[in-house]
Amino acid sequence: MISVKISEEKINPTNSYGEVTDPGVGGTVQFVGTVRNQTKGKKVLRLEFEAYESMAIKEMNKIAETIVAQWSATHVSIHHRVGTLEIKDIAVIISVATPHRKVAFEACQYAINTLKERVPIWKKEIFEDGEVWVAAHP
Amino acid sequence: MKIRLRAFGIAKDILKSGVVELDEDQIQTTGDVKSYLSKAYPEFDDLLTFSLAVRDEYQEDDYMLAENDEVIVIPPVSGG
Image (tube, rainbow over all chains, first blue to last red; front, side, top):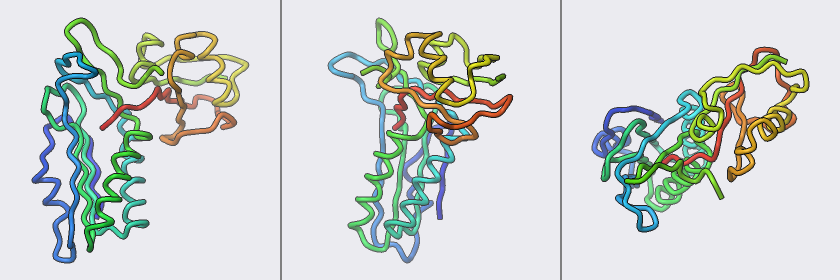
């Protein structure tokens, strides 16, 4: 089962875990990405996330389908939040459930790495003295 | 050719709008759109990279556009 979602509402690790539990699953790896309070020593006030939603959903589905095909995952859940996020808020949750634990780690790492490379979602860091689109410039 | 650009993230700031209508004879491919953007908005060359998508898929520079296509301008992504 694949669950892919982008929402402005808070996302929840328990809900994501609930989507991938199954009697045939032996291990679940969950990655939770949260908003950090600083970047290179500079205080971050909040983040603003924006997505090109239809394509982001399509790319997140491709990631989940690859995980099912290559790592024989039983269930994959990828949820990303957009809008204004405060420090400690959860930006992304990825849960990968597999019959055996080893591939769950690998597949979950593949998912977050590929999401950061390909999925059309952008974050802006808001500082006390300005704001910056993350990773835009070399 | 007549196309519509839709921009996100810093690309929206550079274009000063989320949507820009273009009608340029020299634009036939996504590569032509990139050249046009670099020339008309030099700030695009300061970015780490930028990509274009059509019909919700990333496209290489040789992708042939059709009249009234919507071309998505994708600056470096930073989700997660």
